[in-house]
Amino acid sequence: MYKKILVPVEPSHVERHETALKMAKQLADDGGAEIIALTVIEPVPGYFAMAESMPDMQLKAGEETLKQLRSFVGDGSSIKSRVLHGHAATEIIGYAEREGVDCIVIASHKPEFVDFFLGSTAARVVRHATCSVHVIR
Image (cartoon, rainbow, N blue to C red; front, side):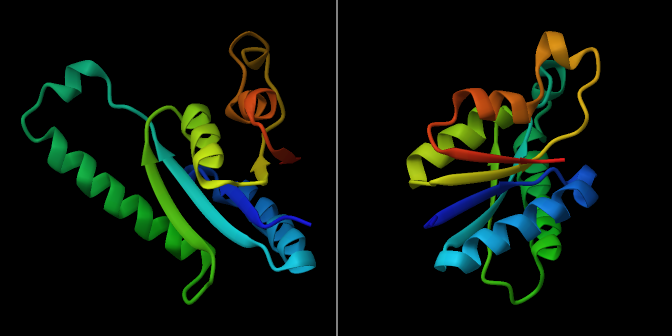
């Protein structure tokens, strides 16, 4: 059915993403699809970015996040792990388009009042992705 499945993961909410990863594995088993777990590190506010050590801090954050993501998907897993820097929804959609992803499996929280004005990452991905999107609650 699908050839390439993307599972966005936010390390601070791993419990939500376990269900999304299980769903991606089920979808992949149907047709032997490749699964990619992706975490996006949001931009640092401008007043922090002026520090001279900022590039080193971003590099270390990326390395630590990649370690956490690999730990989440499991040692020896065939699931690929990727870490990007930027705004989550934009990076998820852009990666999916660049890499030919045909399905995104994304976890979502129950919407709160503020989400109706700003929109969650999952909602933005659903509205703007050019491929199929499965939202897991």
